[in-house]
Length: 107
Image (spheres, rainbow, N blue to C red):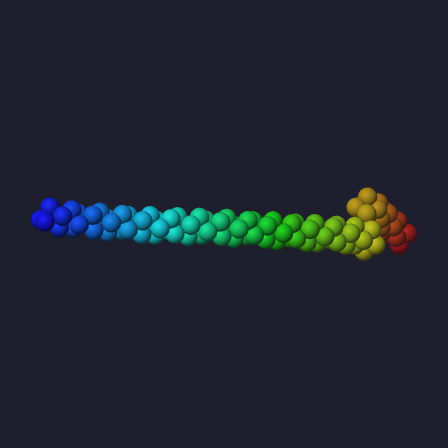
C-alpha cells in the first residue's frame, strides 16, 4: 500500500513537473513571439524613418538647388543690367581723364 501511495505521489509530482514544464515552454514561446513581434515593429519603424529621412534630404536638396538656380539667375540679371563692364569702366575712366586734360589745356 505504501508503494502504491508513493507511486501515486511520484506520478502526481511528475505530472505537475510536466505541466510546469509545458507552462514554462508556453511562456518562453510567448516571450519569443513578443520579441519577434517587437523586432519586426522596430524594423518597420526604422524603415519608415529611413524613407522619411530620404524624402526630407531629397526635398532639401531640391530646395537648395532651386535657391542656387534663382540666385544664379538673379546674379546674372544684376550683372547684365545693373553693373558696368569693368573694361568699359576702365575705358570710360581713360576717356574722362583725357577729357579733363584736354579741358585743362583749352583753358
